[in-house]
Amino acid sequence: MRGQGFDTRAIHAGAEADPATGARQVPIYQTTAYAFRDADHAARLFNLEEVGYIYSRLTNPTVAALQARVAALEGGAGAVCCSSGHAAQIMALFPLMAPGRNIVASTRLYGGTVTQFSHTIRRFGWSAKFVDFDDSEALRAAIDDDTRAVFCESISNPGGAVTDIPAVAAITDAAGVPLIVDSTLATPYLCRPIEMGATLVVHSLTKYMTGNGTVTGGVVVDSGTFDWSASDKFPSLSAPEPAYHGTVFHQTFGAMAFTFHGIAVGLRDLGMTMNPQGAHYTLMGIETLPLRMARHVENAQKVAAWLEADPRVERVTYAGLESSPWNATARRLYPKGAGALFTFAVKGGYQAAVRLVDALALFSHVANLGDARSLVIHSASTTHRQLTEEQQRAAGAAPEIVRLSVGIEDADDLIADLDQALARATA
Ligand SMILES: *Cc1c(COP(=O)(O)O)cnc(C)c1O
Image (tube, rainbow, N blue to C red; front, side):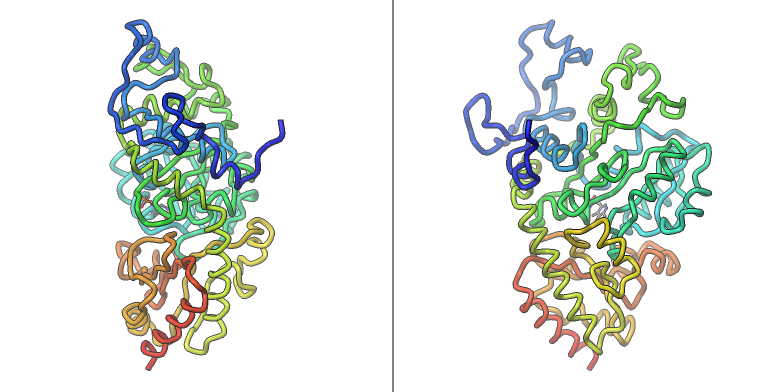
């Protein structure tokens, strides 16, 4: 059968007309539980012998439609939605990790992720080692016998650097560990990490995927291609699961093992479930993802080029600009564009950066990104505030730097707003 194009899948994947009513848009199944046909049906569902709906902490038809859609867009075997992007990260790591195990993570990550990995996961006995993923030797050396995952962002927050995913995947493949890519900033429109060798893709659906700042959500997409049984490193998937009468997930569910484990164990016991109303909004947002992302990128390119040419600006870090060290990688691996999030340094340092943020009128000063609206934030005093100055600099969030999430308004209006704010900030 001829495969459907990306734009068609963005509208149709996972969303047949409702079998019960014919409703054409995916209904919000606002229900906690589902009637069993009889006692035998209930027993089969609880034994994982039949796939179906039991209780909305595990599965819900509206959320299931979103899972199917994101899996189809990423080219994955399956997906599990969660209550937030941060929940998705824990859900991705949970089946892989155990006390004493570590992950190797890129230094260029969303500030909240650096905090989650540096501090919070230690409570589970897990740890993270941070390395520069452009340094293949350092990455290879950091992976040890206790490493159970390697984690990076495709396009990184806040600096907008792009990761050479095939190069990283070659290293993780050789080491026999899964590669997890947070592709929140790229979305599957700009980058499909699984096609480049990633094992798992996580998203904050809060951002571009929903696209209008209404929902907090996340998702873990599994490629279905990692051999969990090739070593004894991943017993949650390759060894008998005591809470399911000794079911071996990889043996029983094959390419769906990680996804079913995510639902049957992860959501069951951690409970980081997405709600059906949020899933409905995200489904509607994804319908226009290709149109929005094309415009986001077009505007970002114009705004970044204008800023770079302005004498009041010290530097702009956008992989879409030739001045970026990541421009060649962006052209090669991200041909539809390098995203719409980048940073720039204003002449005049910290004080000018803060004045600029206050002087902007059309850009909203918020701790979010990927909205249709243009957004701005001073990362060092907000999202990256928990980090040391050294970590801030490594993450591309130095004190003199302002981060823009370029929206889909008229580019000329965005440039006019930046022009007046720069005049006030550097006066
Ligand atoms: C926002 C964000 C997250 C966290 O997502 P939440 O939905 O806010 O929990 C993770 N990674 C990146 C790159 C993000 O931008």
